Length: 385
Length: 241
Image 1 (cartoon, rainbow over the protein chains, first blue to last red):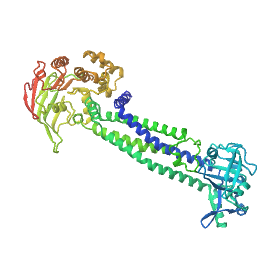
Image 2 (cartoon, rainbow over the protein chains, first blue to last red; image 1 turned 120 degrees about the horizontal axis):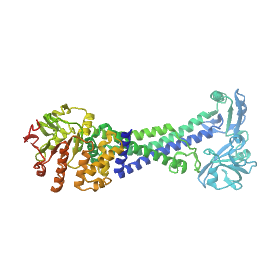
Image 3 (spheres, each protein chain N blue to C red; image 1 turned 90 degrees about the vertical axis):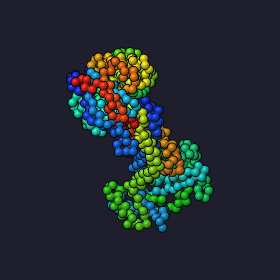
Image 4 (cartoon, each protein chain N blue to C red; image 1 turned 135 degrees about the horizontal axis):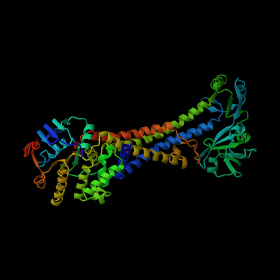
């Protein structure tokens, strides 16, 4: 025990003696970890965010396709689907995208009809008249209106429509609500010139989650021009989307990781004459190879673990305190609006373990192997160089 | 001090030892060739010879800091030339005190820490190590410098620190490689005085030096000459027998 403390004391003293070099190395190391860690933390947070939001989504959404394109779906399809055993409520939804050239943003306009149950986290109240709306936090940030103000939109024929804002979403999870504008269904049909009897899609409630895929197949069979999308498929799509994006980001930052590893290898394999001399002296004074390796391993662990923890703290601060300003535009990309929103704080331990393995282990190897080569030689050889 | 020595048995016995550096490579160097020697307890031996004669190599072999390419080395009749490194490290730690030409102190470390490093593997309590180090520093008139960074010491002070460090494990054999190379005549004589005291305590002292202040000193009771890696002179061979 005493010897272990002594080795640690020696390692600290050794690190301090080469403090300029070691501090520079730790800064580079911590920045690499902070960069890679930011991507992993942000991806995890976005996936958690999407998962949390989609957990309240309908079990099945049914769209209609014609000629490979999405088309409005007849509302009477709802009656056919509602007749299948195991199906609960079938609700037609009316919604569409709206591009605002002024703020260069896409908004999602939805009719209130099928959304009552899902729009719980609201400040103000839901629209009760054709000239009222509720907007997402991102829309409020981008356009500026608050409750009681007017939101002015232009339809495809350049006709101005004015809506009083009666509420703003302040959802804890607002990834999917930040670009929303909720209108009364009739107002939305009027705005998009959407005929009665047609909807954008249908939501299907299924009582038994094990029957979801069977019912989806039945819908596709009985309504051949329909395209049922299950919640699992949506979750899988979002998961893949964020994995793909974070994968792209990681691929870019892997070059930074490689640069760091090359630096570490260069630093370690190019063990300085001073360090070799020191190893030789210690061996001549009676230190065994295992003692020297123990000391060098402690040095490497102190550097790598300190830098790893510092990098993770930096990543945490960047992602969860600052809102990931350096990565958000690349990774989020959910809509063109980029409102600030609080990410759900969380860490994927598996990802951190992988990050630790791909940085700490190579660094330890880079440091200990050359020290082992030097320490394994006779002290006379080491001191002669 | 370490083990009691019988004056009639050789402390160290070297049999037909050769040392070749970079063997088989273009820069091969035959540092020592067929050297056979015996060293007895309590001797003060100086290895003399010009630079490149093999003095430092012979010291390294005697001190178990290198292994011979050929031949055998015995320490108290134990064959040490082929022992594994961990055993050799223990022998170096417990049997030898080294004083190097360049002092080989750890830079940017205090005098006290430099003295304590050799005892780290012994896992002694910090208090014991510190007391022993301060005692030795007091003996060498360096007690007021124990917190000083060794870089700030003069050459003579560094040499005394190196000598104090060599004595930390209370070794029976002191090995000194050109200990006066960086000292003026006055400091060299001071060092010899210290070595005389250490010899009086019963330690065997083996010095490599081509400094006349050392090899002409009355302290020295045996001179061994080397040239081109070969033994050319041993003025008192077998003195201890």
